[in-house]
Length: 185
Image (cartoon, rainbow, N blue to C red; front, side):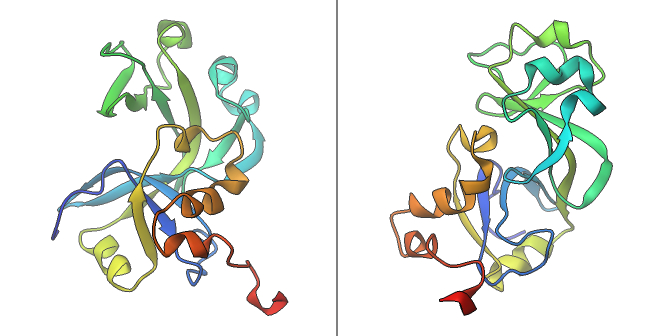
């Protein structure tokens, strides 16, 4: 791996990235080192209500209370991403960076209920082998931008791709107006 870790950054899919798993995706990077990278797509809500899969956690989930498709890897597994304000590290939660961490979804929810500020549950994740993400970045498939605390828990995830691009102080802001189907222009 050349360069700094992208942990805590957002990968925003370039308009030319047409892979259906990642077209218009916003990926929050959870881990990135010489062994590869791992993140979750934060703007892909599914129609599956959390109560159908993890009923004990459903009341703690930040709206919309549905599962999000975190990526194409291990779709049969769930990953809980949560904010715990302050410096506490409650049992059943592992800090990634800042106040963001992973929730042990096998733990009883009542153990964490009082500590959680926001919670979202993802089916699957996005993963890259050693050097794979760096190659995609060289090819221009992704834009790397700073994440804001609310991005992973956006109440309007369907607008997140445009919103993240629009707030950039560069030519990336112009891409927020890029049509999904440029032939409609």
